[in-house]
Image 1: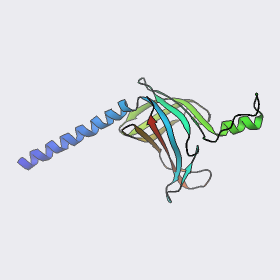
Image 2: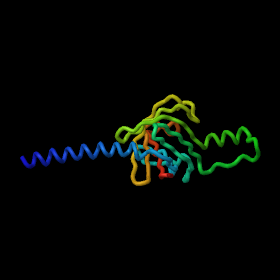
Image 3: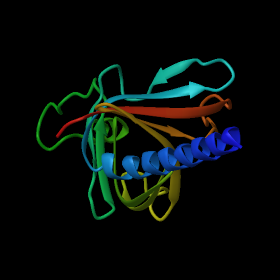
Length: 165
């Protein structure tokens, strides 16, 4: 009998801890996060590619009201030689950045974002899910596996941040 009570108590505390943890992620994600890394990782080999260079610059913001905005820039961007930029310079600048606005919700360790605007118009109107983890002042988002258009390999992307506020 004592063992049954202990087992039930342990199960109760585990369920409570998981619920509390999920609630914590939803509240902990609120704020501004500085981009620290963005890699594509091949599932089979573990090979990684830095999408925005070794030291991308950018910010991801999650509001208490469920809105999000981000902008990220490659670490090798160069200013145009003159103003206005040439077509080639504008294309290079566009190819080395990403930005979007969305609504979001956190359920468990899943972040669901519905994009209402994006630098890549094919994202606009889509809903995407990411697995999230927050440890201290570090946030990690990871996509589900997808076929890379460049390599044909099953790939995930992993984005890392540090709290900025």
